[in-house]
Image (cartoon, rainbow, N blue to C red; front, side, top):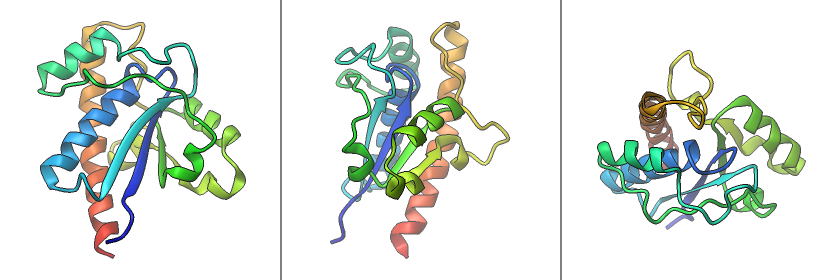
Length: 160
């Protein structure tokens, strides 16, 4: 058996968007029976929330759709992540730029926007932190669409 594909979801603080993407994609993998072949984690480019659970509003929105974020805790992107992960998926252009700045040149090819897999015109998952409940629902809508696209992409890659 080949080594699992490792995917890191990245946003600013790792309490709203990237843990949402993490848990949604993990559930998609489990439903597809691919949880042993594709591993997912999440991290933030900033250090403000290290060790904290996801934002309560993210957890509530996720729970309404059947996702459980209870066990997730925020962490910051580490230098080893660029070596350890096959894909580092940023939630927006700012976080992608931060990853590009931090990544060793030989690992920059692993960096992409998560929304590249959504087949939508939107390039970013907007940060809902200063928003309302509907902003967290919008994040879930975008994340679910991108997660489905990422799953299709990885299924094809695993067949090759």
